[in-house]
Image (cartoon, rainbow, N blue to C red; front, side, top):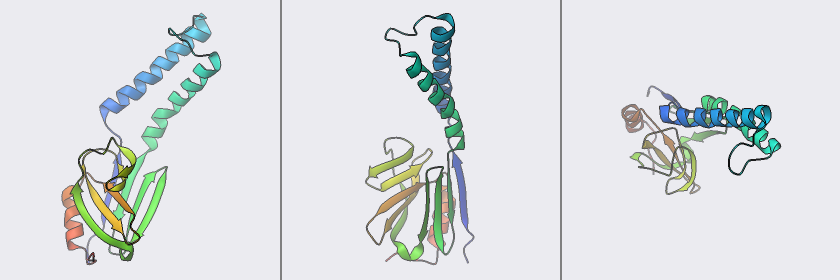
Length: 162
């Protein structure tokens, strides 16, 4: 019996947080300038309503990014993947035609990336993951930071791809 594989990944990149917090602070400064000081913010200022809506969305961005995580659990029965709070999948081994741990390179960014050569890619950073092709022809890739552990699990998995 194979020991189950488990991984939880979050967006912890410092540069990402600098950008998100920077845009948030800029929008709050714009609110202060336009609402408190009474000076339109920027060369082509937004309306008060647009600026307020933008600032509210920027306030929610750090919370959303902090909440987002990619959870992967693989055992001898199935693969469970959740990209919280957006997607949750359960894939039985019997539904898998092929699976392989790959170096997928760069697929246009991180998060959920549809329409790649691997189908939909779910990742938080890096360039390694489990590429899966289902018997129905659909493809997906689940990113990993634990490439050695995942490779060993897949190698020792009793389920073989046809």
